[in-house]
Length: 159
Image (cartoon, rainbow, N blue to C red; front, side, top):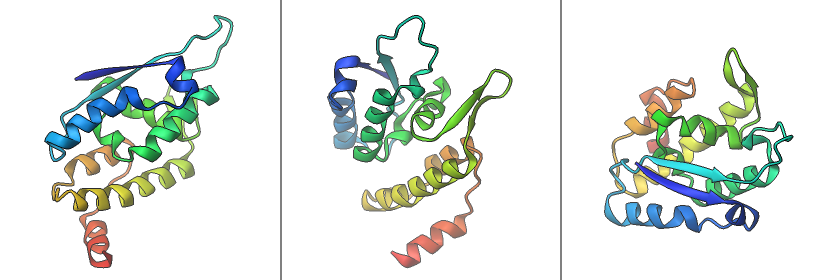
């Protein structure tokens, strides 16, 4: 596990350098091994009277949108067991929080994000000669989607 601290300075300046170093090391050594297990520690001062969750703060969401755009494979590197994938997706997909049911993503927005990610990551895996799609399939399962191998076969045919 690698914990990366992201402070308000990085968030307000859209500075991705806190995550760049561990990701660059991973890419240089073993991109076929998804063993980075990143945890993102958000250190953003908030007024004690501010009831918003971190995912409701526009500046934080904007930082995550930039990170997602620059590192589209970032969801594959997160520590899913620590809840990092759910929090990451909450930064990017509209949602509501229920004390009883937890995070409830907007279903259409989640489906669009998942399929966008599947298409992009399938190409990324192919470019890096990574034939194993199990991490990608497991990621979508964690978000409630089951991918059929036929989808990947179709994507390979279309190049």
